[in-house]
Image (tube, rainbow, N blue to C red; front, side):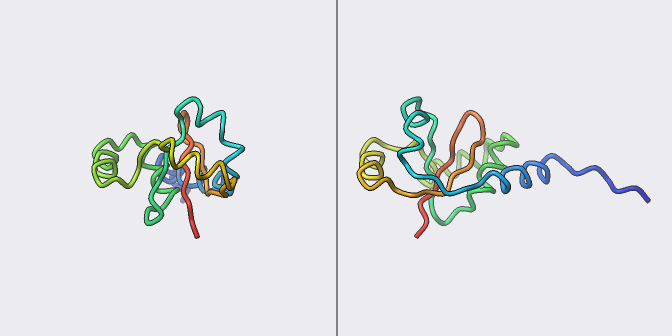
Length: 103
């Protein structure tokens, strides 16, 4: 019996998981300057957020936004990260770069 083709969600999960990496804040300055960097709360799974973005799950994103669990990186946070060149987890979900600070 032939394997069933993978669904979009599974493919997105594999893709984003393979692209997730640590990056220093200084390397994200161009994306930040264009307003494309989104901060993801530490309690959320960064890959899952990217997958839901890829699936255009508006309802879930509205909830995360309302709960202040995802938001554009604010200037104060960007400056603090810049001063110490904070290392972050990141994944690109075009046109966005999702970042997450983990301890």
